[in-house]
Image 1 (tube, helix red, strand yellow):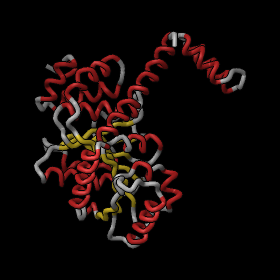
Image 2 (cartoon, rainbow, N blue to C red; image 1 turned 90 degrees about the vertical axis):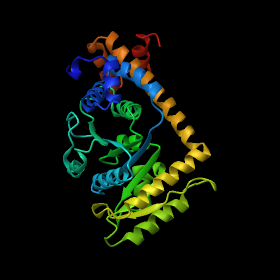
Image 3 (spheres, rainbow, N blue to C red; image 1 turned 45 degrees about the vertical axis):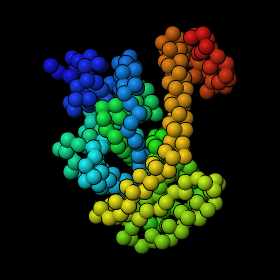
Length: 320
């Protein structure tokens, strides 16, 4: 029977049994949003919680995809399974195909212990910020204990997504910008580990000093985790073992301190808030005619109605 004809419960049972087509179908439904995505959320949630998520982010060209591929290889050498969500905010959704600069990951495409999925902004009715945590939970619930979330760039969406991981790895290159630029990108606030990739190039020590200075200026508590700086040559696989050991040290630290539990509780509260806000918006759109919704937006942009009054009318339609 085609996976398209299976119910959500049947798909979930098949995915837990190792059916990759069923898992891919569920991820497509999560991305599409709507009633089936909500049903998946209800089925998946009780079975999740054992997986660990590592986010990898950094400027385009930093070598994140090469590093992700090398990390996959290292995890597999340890005999563990891994799933990868590759977040691309600009490319059209491709139904799970590996996007442009991720061709190196094809080395792992035939490995049953590796599952790679690309997710793109286009086609997301609920937005990446809602689809991604649900996709992570789904991968967790079907038994993937390590989940890597790689983002293409360092825009607001990508930084937010990577920052929602349990451990966030920020990838930079030798000669990477100054501390002001780093803070503008939001990377300092989310980094648990810094990787200087392409560490065979000139400028590694200068980049390390720059990062160390930024860490000195940051307001870290005495007993807080201080993000280590790990030099890596991802294309050669050098330093990846040290990176993974550092990720595991960070995991042990935040588990022992209770920080991991606090982070996860905070993320769930934020996700709940965003779901409620998104559902209210969708419900208001359903009740208000499309014409009136557009009129209110036009009135605000023309400054004939203030945003608060327009929002009041929108929310009044749902009794909020």
